[in-house]
Amino acid sequence: MNEDLKLFYAMVKETRAGVLNWLEALPHEVFVQERPDFAYGSLRGIYAHIAHCYRVWLSTRGLGLPVARLHPETAAELREVFEGVDAIVAEALEAFTHPDEPIHIDWDDGEVFTPTRRWLVLHPITHEFHHKGQALALARVIGHPHPGNPDTDLKSLT
Image (cartoon, rainbow, N blue to C red; front, side, top):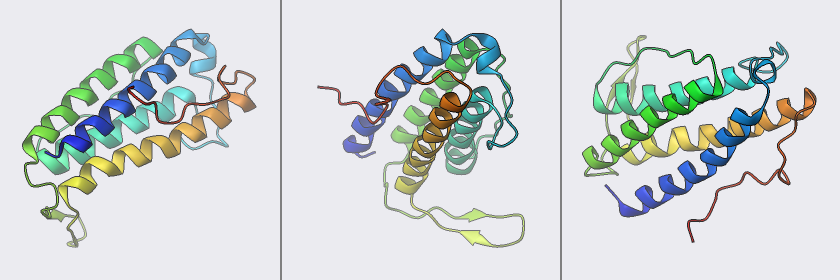
């Protein structure tokens, strides 16, 4: 797979590591605090959803391997889930030797979706950053904002 995508995902992992460190530093009751006015309801729910998106798009739809929905109870368990996500992404980046070749995905309604393998890698990444913004907003609302600026934008590896 394209070396640029590998480098890009390394930056994503570095960025996520800072967020996971912050989530692990929060009191557990804050990590799991439910807010029904936010999609996925809690910081735990948001990040479990992010991980599930990677797993479905890359493992199930991209590599043809089944995945079960995971329900991490703690931020430390969430970090383990993302270690599994990283392994799936690494496998996909090696397996997708022609990143711009379309892949055919059959939907339950009979429709066919034909994204490229590059799209399969990039979609969960953009999805993650979308929901990261949601998580940062939720944290501010519940009184536990990220301690940064909150600069959790893509980290450079240099």
